[in-house]
Image (cartoon, rainbow, N blue to C red):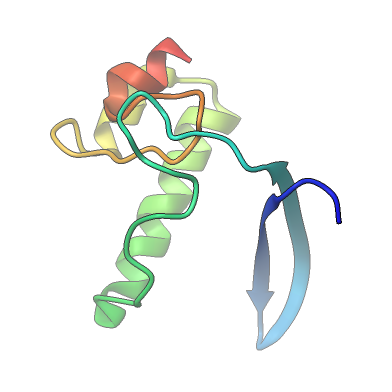
Length: 100
């Protein structure tokens, strides 16, 4: 009966057991200036064989940019040609992310 919310959950799994959990709820907003909504885009898992490589990429991004605070390292991990943003307040691309 209230506002429409968008939600997601993230789980950290280690040794076959959930070790941590994060969730987020946000009011539905958008589309952003790049015309992306909060929920459009692919939903099927692709490239399952690249799981370990993708985990390493995501871990490297979080470590370098978020933990160490090296924002300029984002281009080492995020495509400078094609980066789709689903945050209603941020445009696509590293320029949109950097402006935020």
